[in-house]
Image 1 (spheres, rainbow, N blue to C red):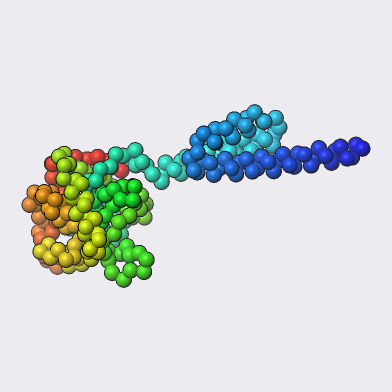
Image 2: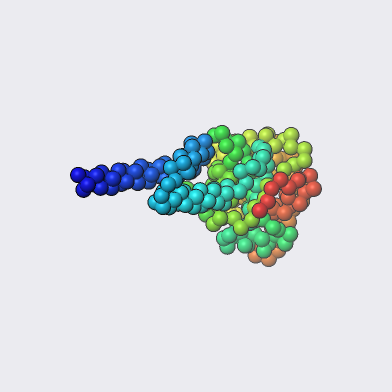
Length: 251
């Protein structure tokens, strides 16, 4: 009788442990999904049931998970509270060799690449043109659209910023022009020719989108290089140095 009682107690303890482990797993997924209300209820349940060392161990495990996940989420989306608008210009200082070449050529440059923010598929995204970021088996460099978090991915951006025209009445029109060019599938211009709009490079693209909306966001400013790269270009600094722009966010 005593052995049976001991067995029942041990079995009950194991069942209780399994139940608690399932609760911990459930809480983890609740946190990941940001279901704060449900997480709170489970946390209160664990505190109420806290009556032995095993449950305390799970309580500490839950606390560690909460801290880890919240830190991870903060790092993944540090700009979630930024109030973007259509037509905002987004910049980044890239990590690759070509980004370093742009910064070397642009003596006033802080950023090496730019795009236009649009509101598409219920979220703010970036339309831009860049080399060496082909997707889905593409064989050419062309215009693309992607979430802001991808544009500012750690392996792509050391620093970033968003600028907006003080009079942003043309922002939505510029965004629509950017989407029109996206539909056309404009190719990246490896020759960097401003007089040919069948292909474009990044700053030419954002300048052209605003030009079609009725605004020269460079105010006619151009950068001229000699030597091997001889030519006339629009660099990122030719745009964001325009005092008609205001800085919205940077990191």
